[in-house]
Each structure stands twice: as C-alpha cells, then as structure tokens.
Amino acid sequence: MAGLIHVYCGDGKGKTTAAMGLALRAAGSGKKVIVMQFSKDGKSSELVSLNRVPGVEVIPQTRTFGFTWTLSEEEKAEAAVYYSGLLEKAFEAAENGCGLLVLDEAMSACANGFIKETRLLELLRQKPEELEVVLTGRGPSAQLLELADYVTEMCKRKHPFEKGVPARKGIEY
Image (cartoon, rainbow, N blue to C red; front, top):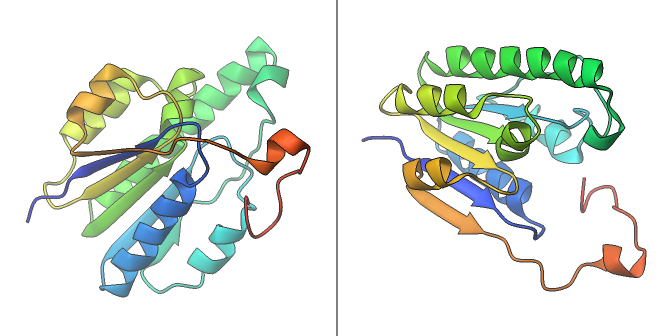
C-alpha cells in the first residue's frame, strides 16, 4: 500500500503530540519509525519515551542553535548546513524499509531558511512508495499543502501561555 504525506500545522497545541502519537501507533503495528526534529534541543519528554520503543529511531540532535530571532547570520548559515544534512540523513535512513518518517517542525525549518523547501519537496516526491511521512509546524507553503494527502490544522482558541503560564515539562515539552 502506498504511503501518504501528512501535514499537521496551525498555531494551536498538538502538532508534535499528534505526530508522536502516530509514531507510537506505527511502531505498535510493527513498522519501523524514524523521528527527526528541527529547531528543538532534543530534550523533549516524548523523545525519552520514543527512544524506549522497539522499532523507533530518533535521529539525535548533536547541536542546538537557540531561538531563531537570537541567531546571527553566521549562526543561521551554520544551522542551515546542519539541518539540511539531518534532512538528507533522515530520508537516507528511511529508504531501508521504514514505515513512517516524522519530520517535526519541518515547515518552521523551511520558513526560517534552515532547509530548502525545493529540496524537501523533491525528497517527498522521490520517497519510497510505501513510506508514510508526517511534517509538522506553522505556515506550510501552498506547494506542501498541495502535495500532502492529509492536512490537519490545529487552531488555538485559548492557551495558558496567554495568562503567563510557562511551558510545562510533560505537557508542552
């Protein structure tokens, strides 16, 4: 059966949560899963759990760059080289019988220039036929939306952050 492309986008909470839930579901059915996160420090609580699940490979973050708006142009260029390399690594790893590839914050990585959208689209069009791919983040382009088979938008109606409640371990990260 052909693998499809999922986009989980929007300004609401739940994009990564939905992607990680699908990763658990796929692993539970015996599929090989690869998870790659962009613009995160590799310390989110879901990764602790996923690293314990047989059949799930989390591509580790060996570098962090901080918030995009704090980076110099040189640091942004370094991040682009780093994340572009991880994107290639993720698709190479997915060529060997992978059932699900999760690219968490891929749309943000495109928007911030850390990966080239043209390359991402090319990799998606050339993916192994059976590979299911999930991309999360805000602001997907028209091209990504057109290519996707599923598009789910998380819409924020209310969020505790608006009342000054910071992100909480185990809930938001």
